[in-house]
Length: 240
Image 1 (tube, rainbow, N blue to C red):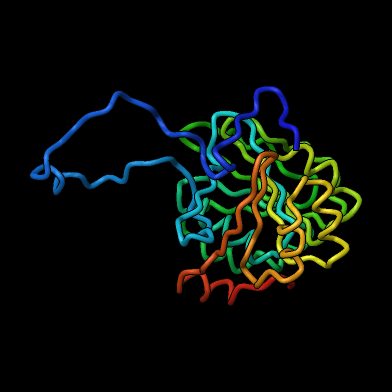
Image 2 (tube, rainbow, N blue to C red; image 1 turned 90 degrees about the vertical axis):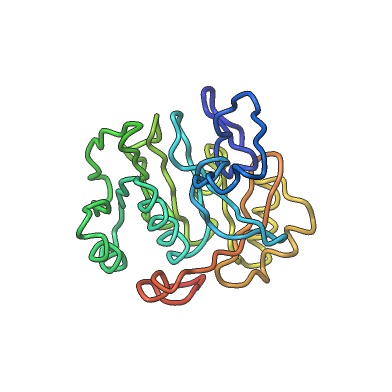
């Protein structure tokens, strides 16, 4: 997954490095006054194998492409959580019915909009109003006018590995792979330069578990839905 010039990779792809300032020391008596979390920005997409939060930084000042080879459920959870951080979500899809409940849930805020394939208009992203485009266009997503740019990330959902996979994984800053067949696991291993243990694990991944990969390393992440997410989207599933 070679990164294009100007693209910024987060550490393991899970969030850009936060602002760095000179260090301050405070006494125990001041701890109670700390109310804001300190750390890197992003969307909590689950927990890793050490049960630590995994954060995906989608709102960035530079182009950022994510490819998810997996299920609609995971893509929709990511969209919901990105919307909760203040991002506008534009879904490019040929199956609007599959996104209808999510759009209804966000109707009050208007932060989720559906568009036909190839019909996503200019979205005007900015630091104050970042955009995440979710491309749910099947195995062969056509070239889109909507591409990643400053404050506009693009997440492309592929149900399985197919003809478009090599180009999309090469372009992506981050790739997620959910349960696939043994043959597909071997292909994914070659494309993503995965270690043998990760390739063996892919066919047996549970629903809601994703192997997130950059060029340098990979991490297994389990996405656990909140009660509200389960009520809206149902239980975690790999296949719809």
